[in-house]
Image (tube, rainbow over all chains, first blue to last red; front, top):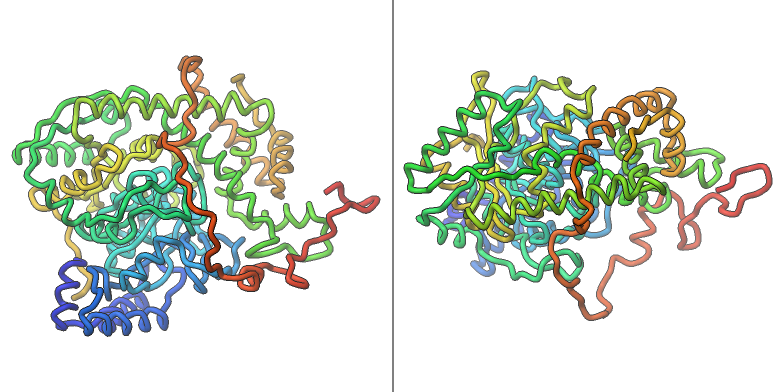
Length: 478
Length: 105
């Protein structure tokens, strides 16, 4: 979609101001609750500047004049950034996240900030202080989380593409649940500077789009080393659309992990997966069964590591430097604990669990143990990638579930992440691609997992699925 | 890792460490939910990891260093502007040194 719009903008059949107005109009009529903040004035200003840039013909990039949405966990200069939490109030950061700054430098138009699970903690987008996001495909169902607004906005045509973040599946799961494409890049490929930290050893920013190519186009703008993030890898920015195209035509050995097909997987997911596999076999790829023996431990490892890192990262919300402060004649400790009571329930639960796992007497039994098993899970992939070029697996055991269905049982909700979490633990890139619809009309997704920095390969596979197996219809009202 | 009963007392103790006020309802709820979650996490004990080096980061590479040069920043005023309370270009906080009968802070 982005490259088609880019051609129209370049040939002056369409202006960025017209395009931006088109999306702003759709956002005003939105019923999915995808946006928390709409930047009407700013985006029209950016669109006007983009039109001038296109008219001058100088320094035009594929994103120049393209309206995008941002998950509300990315800092935006002068624009309210809430993390879908009450604790940040009307916090307006005095700087842009590097990924946001790079999009702006490319000439992209930023429409506004998207709803999410509070501090990216959740798999259904029901943990937002501003209300749940509804799945555009069926409003009685969740869009997945935590980047639920980012996925719903793409599906409902409220942005040409969006940025989300993926700590344990938060880009891929909502992509699968809404019938969109979502890429979780290799850990370290995209700078996390200005991303409000949840679990720093796992967090990664990634694009969501209507097509694989859209994700590649956005990735090209945001990837590459940033001196402000010491975990960002020394890599130069690259054109992922071209790199993806160069990968096409290669006949690959694709591994299917047997551990992903044992229990609890919905019939429709297994069926659509096997159709996709047949399609790719016809295209000349070879499939082999592989084993990732420690898969069953990944949820347990994740829910120790992610909450431990979160409890430490979220210590910064203390009522002193930003956001809200509890009112009244309070001692320092009271001020801290009453201010922090503004966190939502899921965030509190994770802070408690994380603080416990890091506390004296339990650190070795929980945190250290989880770090050790993390190495085993990561090692499973290293072994597998000696035999195969990529791994293909379902994104989630089921299609989207109903709003309210799992919210009372945190463990049940966590287990939904079983297929996405291992990728974050190993820091690998993965892309979720739509492969069909379940009987009740809900989208189903599947993911390709690559070696570190092999985004071009998994992008090419995803694009091949779109072209030769299944393509989810996109309607942004043009 | 011994089986943990995440009692309401444990929840309250940890909540204090995290400087997080919980309602009685939240305390009771977390006690039962976290007991269940820790029970699930027990499965890690079935693995022998005595010879496994803990993994704390993805890439085993040297931290990239950069020159320590000054560069433009938003400036103190813009940053202080985000604070709920400020005074004389500083963050304003409640009294830190405890007075008798108040808080141990």
